[in-house]
Image 1 (tube, rainbow, N blue to C red):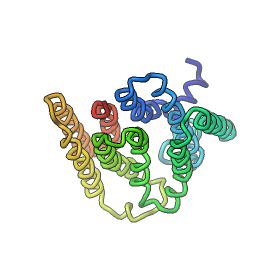
Image 2: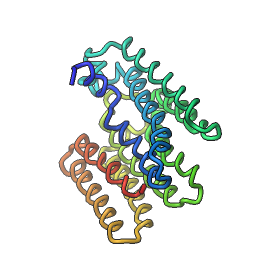
Image 3: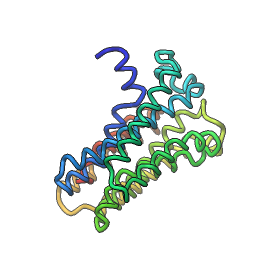
Image 4: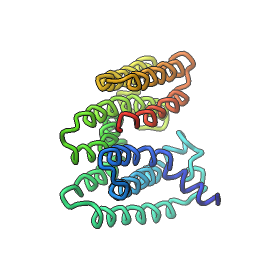
Length: 262
């Protein structure tokens, strides 16, 4: 793969874009059986996700020089001007895709999503204590989009609630990792052990919500897998003092959680 392509994929965090898109694509395909419709509804979400990571990388250049110097912009592998051009190109494509392919009565979901992700930098800079719950809420929107089409599907609502708490815990962990480069907030005053306890407790709440969906043996195995992730990530953070490793382990939640969207 060409170096420029690798830099671009790193910049938009392609793995996260795929996981976010799967949160809409998988449940829609499972319920509609229509591959084309599922792809059409997922395409703008993928583009919006890429825009999100792009604009956040641009806004966080100075902060990332401390927290993540290896990323494309702070490391100098890509110029901010090039990143801005890519951002506007992706944003325009996302808006056009929504306008021409999403039914009019559902376009507002995508427009609100765009507004929320663009506004994230203001929350991060001026309301840092709200950053984690803000991101956790936004992460539930792909599932809520599908639920708006299948209004009687309570399973989707429960999964969205579980995702909120599980992602809230991971965002608390990520914010803890980035403390040194983030604006001071009340979260900086909380001792590390209490931060870890808060993060892991919120994830336990999410797992408890998912446990209400169990009805067969495979469901129980999935819950056991989530509990294992919680134990391993907690051990990495609390016992080994490796919050970065803990955050990496927590990412498995989002891959394993696709099971509950089917």
